[in-house]
Image 1 (tube, rainbow, N blue to C red):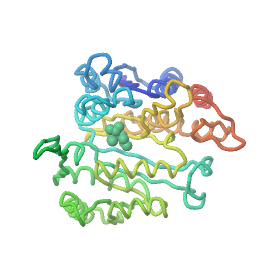
Image 2: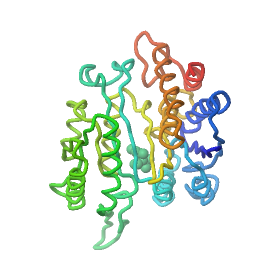
Image 3: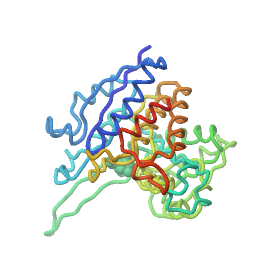
Length: 356
Ligand code: IPM
Ligand code: MG
């Protein structure tokens, strides 16, 4: 059966990195029998410029009709002064909410070839393999009430951090199930000493832990978790946490691996439908220059093959090809090292295609 993939390049470096990921998809379709067809759409600032909204109804319809979505990045200074309601980021958040993509998987893996690119000592990060499971459709990102109000001569901005038991249970289940396929350890990250919503989080995860007796469960406050990530990151296997804590900790974990330009992500609903994107942003400072690292996006295609398209062997092919280009000492500027060969976005994509 032919699967439908919706491609949303978005803004900034989005179109450049997506172009390379599409080359890879083409090879899989033309040479390796992947039954998939690509559709294209607008999201973020690109959509706003086109129709005044970062998530047109048509794009959401396309996304609903697709089996998987491949997204580049959204946002940029051009749209910074817009009202929050129509900022490019709202397009991304609208897709996550509209498709009920509550489970965000952000693997932080250190490629041995890049050990020197990490800001941490090689012995601290070598062999690093963490899976951050971030709740993606709840918490303070979506809690109501929210907004601004004016009283006593000044404005107040406010948000609500809220989690219900079912929301915590479904993300907890994803984390425990993934841990079973890895090193069977889950660290749940919260701020249960201060915030009721995450006190409930800890209670629910603890309760669930009893049903996963084969998985070693620990709990950590988020401030300590941030510290432990840079002190001794290899202690972690699977980390499960709230929407905002996961946003912050995943950037931190990404940097351990040398460059945020290497890390893919999957955002899944309860039925395996997913949106796949690099965890880095639109990098407006290098947009259009052909300098961006396309590997995070290409590795996001690998995650798509594994988690939505049920093509694990093809996913592995991509991962092996990425390792091969790193072995050839090809490096985009973000991962450049002494003695390596610096290449641009398209050359890196071409090298992956050649290695495939
Ligand atoms: C991410 C990004 C987004 C988020 C932004 C662009 C809305 O930082 O995917 O981590 O905060 O979730
Ligand atoms: Mg982020």
